[in-house]
Image (cartoon, rainbow, N blue to C red):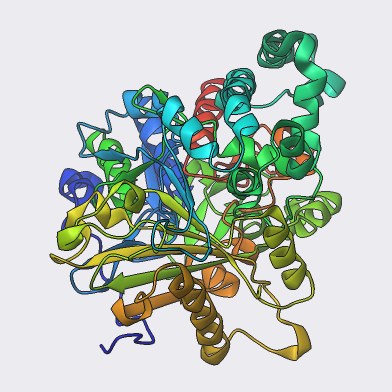
Length: 581
């Protein structure tokens, strides 16, 4: 395809025969009429839930509508030889206990930790003696301070204190991720025994309060205030503030000036990989390799995983209890419980018989905020981008800044806010916020020699365009051209290096991955849709109004990101319920 080629040639399986398929090639690879548990959707959370249930002795089947497992954590070949993490593209939040319990390394998971991890080049006029400035951040605090001091010595001194402040908040929040939220319904209507059990769910909250101690008011502000207000209290230099603010708005239809944006930042710094707090990594083979490792762990224990098997309906008996699912081809599969990795909207508004759901519950689900600002662009290139602020080395070998999240149009929080304001009016941002990643800089298995795969996570693009326009190929390419023009300003020659591109607007993300509104979190990560309000109040413990039906995807606590916590937590709730049936 010529440079600047318009599109997707074809999508292929991430592997001709992944380990999970080989593991279940025996009896558990054949569809049976009945299982103990059925999981709708082979997203990473659904696979985690299946792996835990099967290890606990619950005979489990997973039904995936696509030809490939993983949901949004998937690897697909856009053109032969180029393997893309087509939707989600970085790993950090995966709960360490899941890696240990499911023995994911044994099942092929290999990570490439990134250090440095963030690169923000400036658009400045260079001189004979000085290149445009840039901000490069990694795990070396002294090096970070030297980088920040280009813009502010005061900020360089404050940065270690800020990092310690955020680490303490992460330490407090972390235990809340690994259990169901406080069971408020049990406190109100449960038996004495149920109320006593519910008291135990308060322990993580009490522990969090003790961890934060006298600084609780300051931490409360981080969770509720605009991130711009929080960062203004710590720093004065815009390149540093804007770089940090990107983690507060990424994937969210919010501005740095939106109250509550601080929590989204926290959600992106609370990860831990291989003992390194806050580390982000590329998965060797792309994000689909993580899903394959989880599936392999599940299949080795006996779980059955089926692709191209679409669930059309959740079956409910005359007593209002789940009794299985009906597939799109008409086949019925019985089960004692059903777990849905699909979004709350798909689960309750499309798959569940409406007569068994309270009207107020259905109304709340239909009103969930699923606005998405994201357009993901996957690009195959024949050379590394060459940034004016950090020219390529001889031989075009990847350097430290190539392995980072490269932030473009992120020199000033005002730029981020203006990009958001464009989208509020139904227009794609004139200067989109761009997070550019080059996973092939650390994992050469993703592209042919000398070539690279580039992931562009861009915003803000509204789901619905102003003036009656729709996201047709012309509108998609017009926006992508704008993004490429922005990259060209930082890295001249980028556009000439492009071999092909795959443009996924919010409607595309919804259509392909069933992300409601294109939202990568299955719903906004705002305070009114978190913890005991996720997906809605009174139903945050993974259980649903229909007995035997559970939510185990990103629409449940603790929310989106490739974390696996919702799947693991839901599996344990299901197992306890099965023992009491």
